[in-house]
Length: 80
Image 1 (cartoon, helix red, strand yellow):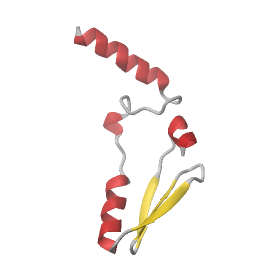
Image 2 (spheres, one colour; image 1 turned 180 degrees about the vertical axis):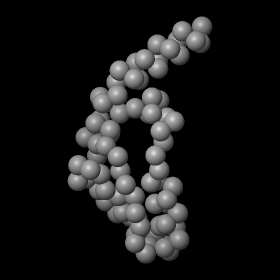
Image 3 (cartoon, one colour; image 1 turned 90 degrees about the vertical axis):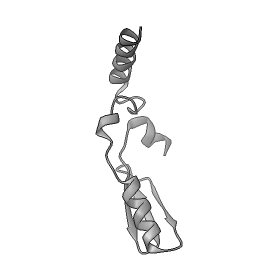
């Protein structure tokens, strides 16, 4: 999973009955079983979202490094 965080892969979350599953484009993934299907559905829905507004703040370590650096420089200029 470290490889996924470094290169910014996108995890997809699904649920089947009481089991929540996640899978990345690189093949990494897993599953977790909950007490009931409603909990599995709730967690899968909460985790399976796209945060486009946070793209520069939560940028992948290597993939969007220039964007992360630009945000830091702009924050320093605006912050004083």
